[in-house]
Image (cartoon, rainbow over all chains, first blue to last red; front, side):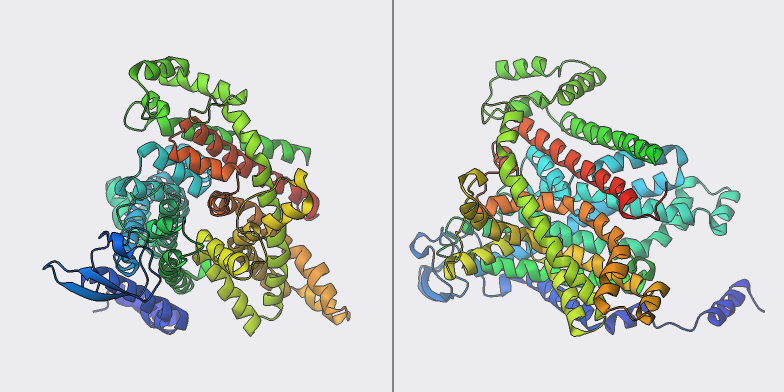
Length: 309
Length: 313
């Protein structure tokens, strides 16, 4: 027996030549592959940081302060014996091992970036769905978002951090908040077209409660553009966190993040540039990888959007 | 046309008002006592109470907003607790370095990015095009302060061509002034160049497919004339728009660049104010930068009417 979905499949097949799957198309793009590999390496580094020949990232060693990269350092092991160790990224002005700090910093920097992305995307998605669907909310919410968007992002994050005080959680929130209006705008504009679709009308006609219509019928269609947007938000969140920490107003200095390591190296930069160089390379590579993946995803998942820039 | 300008001006007012509401609520909705936050960590309870009544924080929320916005409209942002001056004086003092840096950056970026974008579009899919696109992804990814320190290291420390840090007012002579502005402006330009070059390329690519470009070629016009007079002129609108939107990036970059180069501008003031928990100053800077951002974009919108004869409102 021919079912309705068979007919639909047949129509689809006739209408469009079979496109290779999203993954295939992504995998064919060399720069996306390169970005993916870099990002995977960074994730692996973050996961197995203790196994990569690191020592405690906050371990202070007054004898070996400000060593240039490659210096051999004798350090006292836990059992009291002396061990020779090569600090191949040097040490900072408190004698902490820059290599260990950069490796452990990968954890914090990635985690903050991902957490901030999750916060801004979930809040933005919720507000965007409601604003796009409920007309009475739309005008108010969007004017408020316009106001938020008129405040330059980094400045807003700085202002929020100054109010909430520096801490891991407050920095995550402060980095996430300026991104919210961009998510809201995207989701709202998608919802405005989706809600006119016949299947939404059908769901409403069947008496489906509004939250269920939004979650089950509207939300799934916002996912693809939202993933693209989330990638760019993640890249920008990692940058803004590093920037706040670098300025000394972000994550508390005792937690190793790339921005904090660089902040520590500012004073003696002229003599010991390695404190800024190595975390700078890690930070730039990570953000570059995420941006490249984002560009690739945009071209693959959402060809309409790729025309905009 | 006049009606359009009036309408556009009126439409700006709600946005500015929303910015003000947002900044106002930011402090009020923060958990804890706003007066205590403003007073800072070292204030005693009497000082906190004084601030509370001075700022009208003991009044209901709506009248608080009325008092607060009336002050802002008069240009009264209160007194800085850290610098012991009115915030308005503080900002006026710090205005010159920031303006100089911003203007130098915008000029440099436009002069570099627009030709890059045009060439990339003209030689579409060539190595120049790929190079420009790669450069723009780099520009978005490498943080401003890493670029800053890299430039300082190469050009100021290793090569010794330019001073490492600092700022000289323009009144002290143009030479020392511009000498200290080159590296900061280059640093801040990178992300802006990335943005403008990318949009120029995209916009030019679209225009170069138009029929009238083919007609111009058929007439035997030179390539330069075709590119600039027929191509770039039409492609200009998205480019100018993105220059305006990019001001937001620029403002964020100013804060960082001024800190890296030790320039005593408003960006540096922002960081100092946060470190000192000087809320009146932070609030004023956020309002000021946002208003500048909105007004620059308003000016650009209005400029379209004169730039593009096709636009009729």
